[in-house]
Image (tube, rainbow, N blue to C red):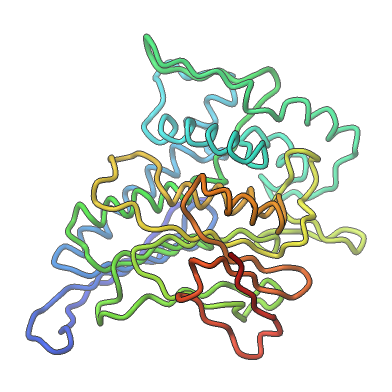
Length: 353
């Protein structure tokens, strides 16, 4: 996560078919190592976007593993909770991270941090670690060793040699809080894109659905599919997002906690789609944005067959769009009427139930 910057523009628009004036506020933000785009429509749109800016800055400062005074860095450095205690982001995300680790049988595991470091994905100093190094680090990849104590005061203690990385759910959690911020400011139409993490509130100001493109992993400027969404999260993970090449082989950043190597699952990308949390979501608690973020990573690691089995299991309410290495786009049944094929993409499309 790098230094935070933002540019906001606000203007008045006349809604089609009526004399009512509404305000549009837009922002482009660089935070959490990605460019984020925010758009809000409503009487308090500019205020909502400014609060969104503040919320993202707070979360980056608290959850970034590369900021020395963040909650995550303090826990990693000391092996336990800092004397000042944990702020809301860390306290909210840890239980969710542990839940998703259990749900995915370890495919999602925040104790992957030392292995991410070994590959150089933390500081962009890329290298292929020796197997012996990975074997030693893998001994410490196990979220079950994290001890969480609720009383008399909340505390967290890591196992020996462990470090955590919340990067796999931080953007999803950020989008949860953006939804809450939008709703608290009376926004009925809005969108935020945090790299591959998209949240849309309501429909577009003209009443139509938001059109959300799924990037083609094989073509940087192309799309593999288009989704028509309202009140929804669509979060994508793919090996094309961050990678390096060495001796003619490509290594991407989605590491399998079971092997310590980039996942080789036959998938190019996984998009998890779920409904918005709604107005009754408890403030600062993780919601469907966090869930989609965690599962997009875990299901990419699992591969097509296990990912679909996990979806069919029905333990969580979401849908999937899988882009496979053999040139298929697989859509789960709940997305069938919200999905559009891309002409001449080179993919074949299939719906599963």
